Length: 114
Length: 109
Image 1: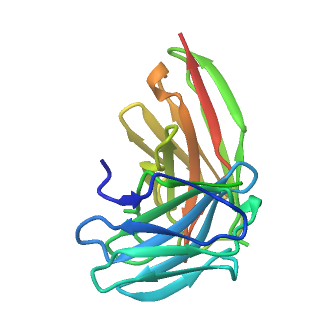
Image 2: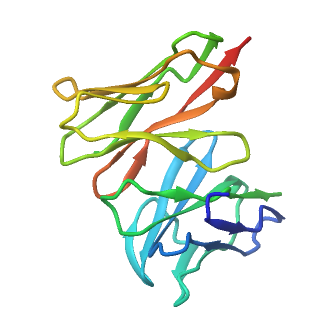
């Protein structure tokens, strides 16, 4: 157990729908990062939050949004889902922001859009 | 660009062999170069990392070699075991953590 908890582990939904993925960071970690892993795109950085504030954005679609709550857990919202959004979504956490090597990943949420 | 190019895409070695995975990067800043190991159904886990002012780092059977002038770094796994079968990602940390494309390693008996 890495200490980073992601729920749900699996999610199957239809095109056009909206889903929310949840991440609880490791105790003491202030930063949360979201990554998308697909066969053709590899591990792509989506967005980072640090202590409740958005810190960096990567290749995140406008249909996707995220937030980090006061208790530091984070949610990734995916809307108007398309078949191509099917992927593994990973959350990672670290004590600080970028520049530190201690990124701990959760086990991911496998999203299947049908 | 902060791309990391990784090769090979897949690798099969016999138990006891020494698989070598190579990565190349563009541009230079104060980077940090970690390697991640990922098993099926799991998230990537930090395996070993190296700073650009170090040419080699060894942790157990895993060794990173870093060639700053060539902008290349590689992972060697000594005395590989079937349990090492996984996907390995090189990465770089500048203003964000950027992954290579991954190498699927299979260690056969």
